[in-house]
Length: 544
Image (cartoon, rainbow, N blue to C red; front, top):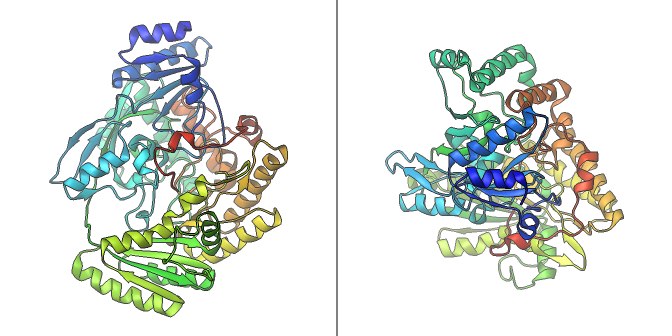
């Protein structure tokens, strides 16, 4: 065991591990990359996290940089849960629901808590956390906050950022801060602190004031956006100030989250669901736009395309037997409403008229068991994720683009042309109501030709997304995978602001380096795995 590991084990309550098998286990996440950490730390409490961060800061002051990477369940598709230094693994010990107020729905949790466990607990109190990702059954709440995760219900309810009230965060030097919305008086107190926290508040406040004109460019014409750092809502016109929106989605690059206070919504288990089949992507888009124009948004508008249906039929002909029949439609939408009864009935009536106008065929269900059967169509995407053909495997390299909903058909058509030009098999699924779609090409990343093809695909794909006024990431974050494209998303002025934000919070570069900022394609190409597998996640059915 190294001197660093010996030192940490002496001073921490949690365990420190350097065995080869543990390090190899944490050398991969849900991405195409591999990076082996030097050692693993299982922090038992916030004080362990603080001591680990303080230790790396003190080494950095003497010129020795040891990165520190927080990790939940490692489901990240872009490599943000990887690092070559100290890996802080939270699910082992810091996995509690600290407090839950069933009256107002406020819940306080530790970052290693399993998202599904939290959701089950909330359901017993007739509450839920709406922006759950598809992976919620096997991912952590800390990972969701770090990525500003979203999912099928985000169409109506928004992303994770909208539900985080406050955070406890360990800064790069080991100081612990609590982020929340401050009024002018409380902000002035922070600005006067003779601490690293005070330095951060002063520097961020000055940076926002100096770049007020540039920050207007952060507002994109998309329904959700997980690219870059969220600066727009840090300082409001009333002078109030909150670092929470900035930390949410920062993927461990600005601080290490140790406690999360969140709001929740009232849960209504009664829903109405349509399954609608379309003979063209254009008609599907028209239906999406009309549904988005209702007085209240549906709780979900999810899509799979005909190519996915064909692929699933070839892989497992019985999976969707009797639900969607041949010849398969060009697209299928699942449209759900979860409003209170009287309001829901009015919306459903109007939605049915829209669907009848544009769909070739549709089904309508109110029975939960019948609805679960229809949802199998959307969940069939998991068959694509887990399928392999020889050494060909569905690879997550371009799975999170988001465009304005009115560009949905143009987006899909452009992706079809791109995949055809590279002679790649294509299947599309995702959140049509948000213009946020997922797709994973079948490639053998052990082959040089396919590795080169993957990066050509990324270049052309993100060029397409940006040309449509979109963002490279709707809900998965930049991580290592999309970080090289971040400057193209916002331009050099905003990217320079992002660089300064990173420098303010992390002057020595110890917090999850290689994620979000200062990353090139040349940096990530050597990190590619020679084999892609989801073996970490087969206790659950991997979902996207």
